[in-house]
Image (cartoon, rainbow, N blue to C red; front, side, top):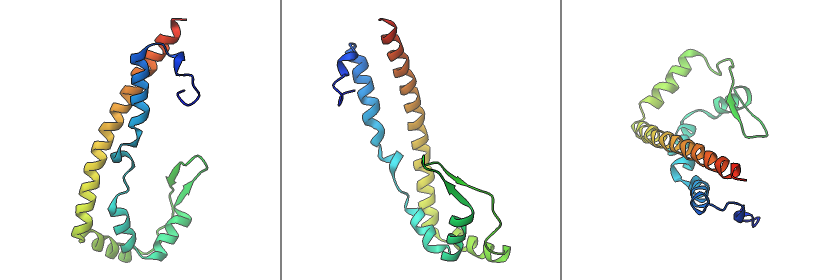
Length: 132
């Protein structure tokens, strides 16, 4: 609304401020951080397994939705156990994963707060529109 020059359509200054705060908060680093463990894991999983997973076990669409789909295992169980054991035994990776779990807990709380803020802002906008 600001870029279109229509901010004046909302007479309530407090509501304008609430909406501005809501839309400027989206850049919170906890919501956009790229976890170090992703690089670490991809360094450890053999490339042929990653190619298989991306080709047969993953899909995405033009709207950005991503989905892991059911597929046959790329390796036998013994080889899978070796890879999992190597990952589980990598203390640096385990530290990165613990950090990421903690970050996701914070991001989840922020997300809940954002939903509450959006719900309150929606109700305030509806109330403002009902005045007309």
